[in-house]
Image (cartoon, rainbow, N blue to C red; front, side):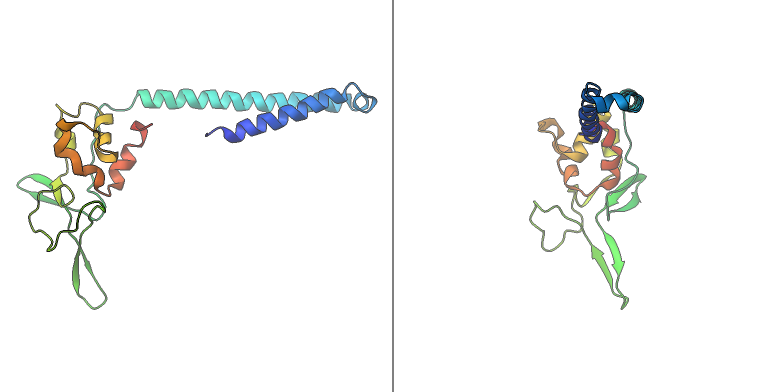
Amino acid sequence: MSYFNTLIFTIVSGIISLLLIVMLFFKVGKEFLYMIVTMEIGIFTVIGYCLFQIIKNEIYIKNMKKNLPERISFSECPDYFIRTEEGGITVCKNTFKSTDGAGNEFNTRIYPMDIPLPNPLPQNSQQKYERFNLYHIEQSNKLLKEARDQCAIVTSMPPNTDLAEFRDYSKIPWTHARARCGPYTD
């Protein structure tokens, strides 16, 4: 899909090239022989350069994916989560405090759409969309051995029953983690 414009250009220029070659068999084409040959050389040069750049870009992308680190670290909390320290552990809490123009303070929480909204809001819930250890994914070496496994937890929860403790991570609006996982997803 990323080379669609190059493909269209190649097809259109191939048709123009074919028409120019056909023109050489007529009297009009023979009068413009040097111009037609020059245009043909130019068309093939541009097509060759485009193909060279595509091949070079594919090799570059392949090498970049091959040299990605085996593990990945998510160092930022999800969107609207607050990063705090509790007993030497970095915790992300779903408690974004905001103040309106009148000086009233509000506590904003972000919940996934597929869960029923708790009423009243819990104070000490252990659900991932309420609070969690920021480095929990990174520190789980025995279950999540590679960065692809870590990213699968954040982007779309894999159907593995051994990973039940990571179930709610994919429901959290975590822009930082999803951006870091871009190279690991196809």
